[in-house]
Amino acid sequence: MHLPSTSQHQIIILSCLLLLLSAFTSGELSASETESVTVYGYDPKKPMCCKKLFDDEPKEKIINCYIFPETRKCLRSVVFIDVKMKKHCINPSASWLGEKIKLLEMQQNDGVKCEDYRKPTWPWTS
Image (cartoon, rainbow, N blue to C red; front, side):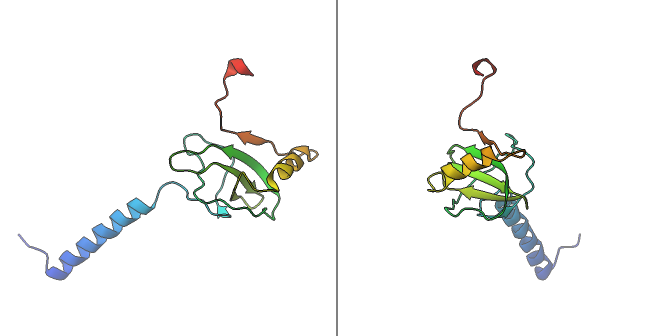
């Protein structure tokens, strides 16, 4: 039976620590003002989560909009996805936001409807 030397033992321990560290730091998306994510629609199994909100209006054209409630881990937010597929976590209290949502919904041909996930939608209430 061959026992590892001290340096081999240290390498094994460091490798295990790095593996554990990466396991704890990966996982759900954290929010940034322009986080690159590919989003084609809301997936309740992998919800978007905003942990930091911004008051600035995005400069790029918006193609999707979602309204999310506050949860244990996520802030109440309006999420815009722009043409570059970047996620913008917007503070719902931003002064420009209401007008921007109205403008998005009024755009001809490619109007953007903000999908509201704050309340469950039941088939019998539509």
